[in-house]
Picture 1 (spheres, one colour):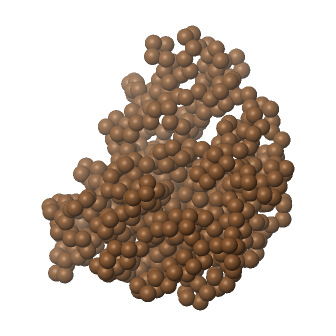
Picture 2: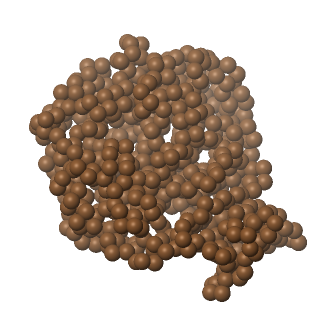
Amino acid sequence: MTTTAPCKLRQNRAHAIGAGSPERSAASCVTSLVLLGALVAYAAATASLSTRYDQTSGRLVILLTGDGEEEEVGYVTAPSDGYAPTACEDGRSDEDCLQFTDSSMAVRHRTLDDRCLDIKVSAKSSTRSIRGCLNHRGAHIYGGIQKAQQTWPAESDVFDHFSYVPKKDGKVGIAVRYWLFSDGRTPIPTPHEEQAHEYAIENFLGKPEAIPDERMATHPVWSTWARHKKDIDDATVRQIAADIIAHGFNESQLQVDDYWESCYGSLTFDTDKFPDVKTMVDDLHKLGYRVTLWVHPFVNQDCEPYYSQALASGYFVTSSNGTVDTQWWRGVGGVIDFTNSEAAAWWACRVWALHKATGIDSFKFDAGETSWLPYESTIEPLELNPVRFTDDYVKTVSQFGPMIEVRSSVRSQQQPVFFRMFDKHSSWSAQNGLRTLIPSLLHMNVVGHPFVLPDMIGGNVNSGNGPDKELYIRWLEATVFMPALQMSIAPWDFDDETVEIARNMTSLHVQYAPRIVELMKRTVQDGSPVNLPIWWLDPTDETALTVDSEFLLGEDILVAPVVTHSATTRDIYLPKGSWRDEVDPAHPVTEGPTWLRKYPAPLNTLPYFTRVSSS
């Protein structure tokens, strides 16, 4: 990675949108805004969207009209004050505006021949919770928001008074306002969902500018976090490095996680725990490691002089009542305002200085969700408050090169970095456990974030209970054909069999790493996902549309891990094509679409297949 630090306090191109000074417009504290974004519905060439206020239900009904027919495709719950609304006196000519007693609702016909609507609700005093619904007309829905109980497909999800922003509650790291319908609904009609997605990539989501680090896509990232939590020091890091090599896992990346700082936000090492960081890093480099470091955007109140410096300079995100402090998982302090170019540069310069002084290769940038901001934040422009913070944070940290990882995004799909899954529980369950790993992978790919760094193998151990041997191995197998591997709990914490299986599985990942890199490069060219749902090969296959425990690497490798406790067989669905079994030594070829019932998958087996023909 480059070692040149662009640290002058000047306007940063990555922060050129909106005002960034600590002096805020008073108007931003008067009107709160909720923007639902573009509501997209499939329509024939002669159809268009329109709205009608229903006094009985208090809803703004969204209608699809065409060919003499009218269909309700959704609604938005209007601000209820008991009185019928009137037309806004100062409404725009290109919108329908309803004025309520203390609020207004505007509907604007945006683009693409009246097939898209923007719906905006403004309240004079505070943000109103509203509920938006879309009638999916029997189609399956994919995409939307990342969450702890990730589902695939997502039409059964229920969101009630749920803010559509990156936030801690629900483990929402990625909040893209994009949904893909299985009947191919887009502003331009398409017969199938993969064509609809290709259209969306080109016209809405965009593509990454480059690929992340190739070595990260090849060899495991080893983190101190899940295994050691905050109890780390020089000796601990060196022992981890020695153990990795002793057990036959070479060419790895070692990540020093929490807690290495002298205080949270100092961006300087605690010299009692790490007396000579430069020597430690140099020694790890000699062993073949690259070394990365956990970094966050907070400065705690007790972290001086850094807190006072940032406070005096106006570098923290500010609430509408002038406060800056916020509660995060490591205390109380301010969060750097990355929408302020000078604040972003001050913080980034200190990270560059840390990099230069220690020889650290790169960084894991944590947090970035809007729930860590003081409420209500005064980020501008108002219609991007608070989500602009998330994307400007990602833009700022992306200057540190392709080895970094982040976990939050709204519209940061263009950044050539790994996006880490939000922390998973060390469990088998569909409540943020192993059962959600594949749905999370598919979700991130379909909303334009295909450079996925899965959470640590075996889960994050945040609840205090780590994985047992079976869960650990099945978790590892499930990630082999994903873009990267991330370890913390060590296979030698279990037994020799686990070590052998782990070596075999990491070697299998290395074997297919060139294909993963090739697919990442294709993503830069045309936006294609790296890991695809199996329906991608035949969008008319009703069975494939609901399979949530299999996935593809590209369009020619199908992976079917075991994600059920105590299972040694599983049912595998093969979509259209000729599929060669890569586990069976005889490599039989099976014609799809078909089910393979009770396919044998003992603990050391990851079922996967190569498509040898598409017909």
